[in-house]
Image (cartoon, rainbow, N blue to C red):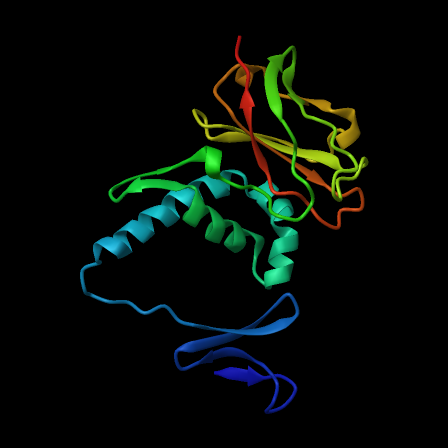
Length: 213
């Protein structure tokens, strides 16, 4: 049974036949119930399922950052941040041919927006953490000097992350992210973004190579 809201012309809450009505972010939304089939899945369906599994495994590890990094794009599309991130990364970060598919961390995005991205980013291990450096491109386009750094360090061997949500400004050109001692020097995938000082937008994330000497 469903309950009508605001009369016969309003939205509804509950199940009617094969659809469900509910409210999401203050909007009335309907969706179809999943359909189950006894037919064997096609290779394309199996490939899509594997792509979703590989992408979801990564996104779940960085979900704290995804909620921030894709928030503005999610609001624009009236979707959840996770679903926007899933849509992009499933298409762009999966490589290979089924069944030999893999997640390419270098192609992944953990944020999406229109702020200019990190320019010439590099990283290296230092005492107590990972140092990020970049070119100060303040004034190029809409790059603001008070844009500040956000970063994700994903350690694939342990599938854990370190986050930086309030980093140095674009003009400073460097920041050091504190890392727990057991992870210092381990293989790591680094993603860096800039967000506006007032939090109104964010840049696409950049994959940052770690320099080893």
